[in-house]
Image (cartoon, rainbow, N blue to C red; front, side, top):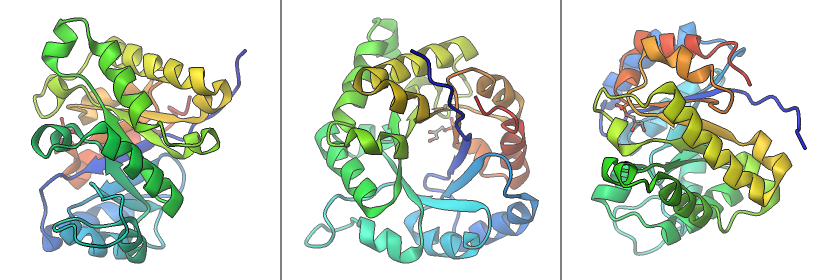
Length: 258
Ligand code: 13P
């Protein structure tokens, strides 16, 4: 059974460990005046240190802000962590969870992510859950088993009624920061596979969940990627550091609502 459903594209800037507060200000000075309420949902994910400034400056504009990580407990002896209530206090709208750099370098695990996704949702934050395979896993033919393992484990504690509040970002590790973008077909195929996994939980919800592509998205490849039926936007790293370049990616998504 098919459900006709229109998904609003989402274009998110993951600044990773880049941009001081003053550099974030410079970006916003140029970027915010170019943004209107129509078109995709645009989200900026700065470092924790620049987050208060970005959230404050985006308030009252169509642009939203998100953190790059959070912990699932609300407070306590967890040195170096921040919690959902702390993000809410800043007026932050969402949080990236499970980025491959956190999984690779900082020991992020699926059981912890399941709790983080649940806590983000219960706080009213939009989780942007990242999944993706390494080059070795792809070459061994393990892409689908890696994706299903991550998606099913990380969403295990999400009530089906809340599934459409999760944004998923498919980011093949071999395409991140390498200049090697997944081909349009590879990206569509993997994202279609993820949507089918969601269908096994709830066919109607699966049509509503936005699934983004991330990995070397640039102004000149964004439109083609987002023209695919299952690709609902992009999570952009390097190309989102430049306001004009990121603006061009946002523009490329206009009219790509599937
Ligand atoms: P790049 O766009 O720099 O490849 O990074 C992608 C990414 O990891 C976004 O989260």
